Amino acid sequence: MAQIITEEILQERVRDALKEVKDPEIPTLSLEELGMVFSISVTGQHAHVQLIPTFVGCPAVELIRRLVAGKVKEVDGIDSTEVTFVMDVPWTSDRITEEGRAKLQEFGIAPPPREFTPRSAPSCPYCGASETDVVSLFGPTACRSIFYCKSCQQPFEGLKYV
Image 1 (cartoon, one colour):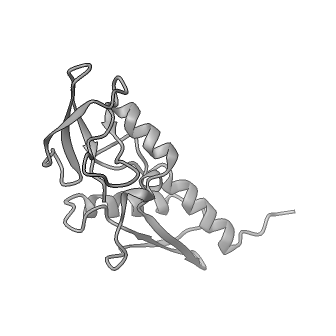
Image 2 (cartoon, rainbow, N blue to C red):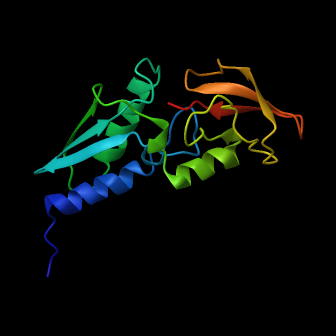
């Protein structure tokens, strides 16, 4: 007996496919782990994925749109795909999953603090020391800052608290 493929099943297939789409700037982290997936809807064989950009001016949004559309088109049972960005719901760093926070740390980028404090320098992702300083609030991308560990003397990047 053949399995009936419902819109709910297709929606789960799309969600599973999105777990494979990596952030272009942090390739060990999926968009799902980063908390960018806002919603997934399936009507018939059409999928609509809504994403929240980490920063409105992020230069990678069009690349992300193409990556998501390409991956969703590979889902068996999906014939067409629409990918849009939600601009009226802000992305915040608390959307990053626990698995995403761990992957950031493994990649050498300190996850953002759970809440903002005046001393917002994160612990070192290399040695775990909390004696760190902000070197520059402006890192290689708009969402990262540069820090320095006083213990192991390594510079490191950290995601900003948003």
